[in-house]
Image (cartoon, rainbow, N blue to C red; front, side, top):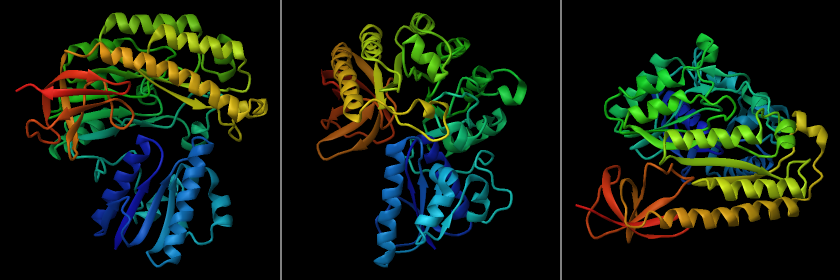
Length: 425
């Protein structure tokens, strides 16, 4: 059969879809990713992290129901976080859907009694062939007050280092040159296996995989940050000087209510130590605007934090009240219009900071990987940028370049979220 897999949500869902796809292909099916063509089956891998993500997932299901009614799809299956968290509601409200599978039920979808998402190293890539995500663990042991992830994905389960090395080797054999390490939290990797953090040993093991030229780290929880990983980052040239470390807020009272641990003083010191250890590191973070107890003064404290810290990359979520989370009892007293206003204020400041940082790159020559070719330019990235969420380098087509290859590019111009350059031959 022809099976189309549509993935919504985060990069961890991308990996799950690729693992499912490999199992279905092994059974002899033709698997596509997000194709609008007719198909026998559509599998929707959904997200349920916040309200906007649930709405997007439900709308996509309804769109596919309409395609089914038009004869463009024969069967619809729903998997992922929305299926895990709201299966009964979906069953009752969407009778047109042919099957809804929680994580433990995926073995029925792929016709394998032993199927486990985290155990297999077989993947059918949906990303361009030169980069891939490597999910090193599943679930989360933290109990942040606003977050539903532990309710959906349960406690952390780490994938053993030998299996991750094997997976990385298979990806390299397919032509992958860049790996993004992902998890709900990278920094606690291995605690469930050995009782201690094993991210640094994992990084050392992955650095031995031939063919991988770039490795970058996503989703590092800030509390008790393992500074030893910075030594590994400096030791091996494969490691991009890049770190995604979600801070969420800077006010002590809100951090306490969020159950994040730490304090403003700790966060400022941690960032200083990271930048001292790796001076050219690009730091990405995410923040939450409009947490239920956030006052205007606390919002301004967050704005000043952004102004002082000058993150290279930054995103802001507006607070989403989630059922069964500890923060649910706080209500949702801040109007959406005010949440959006606070979000925009931070992002306007970040746009200014990003432009200034990008302008400092003009005249530099940077190593760039080419992600795609367009009619009048090539689109690439530096080691300081991850796919889809960060800056691009737009390169003039004076010379023919190959997608997936690395080039030295001289930066000639800067915009708030893009660099422009020319290849140096």
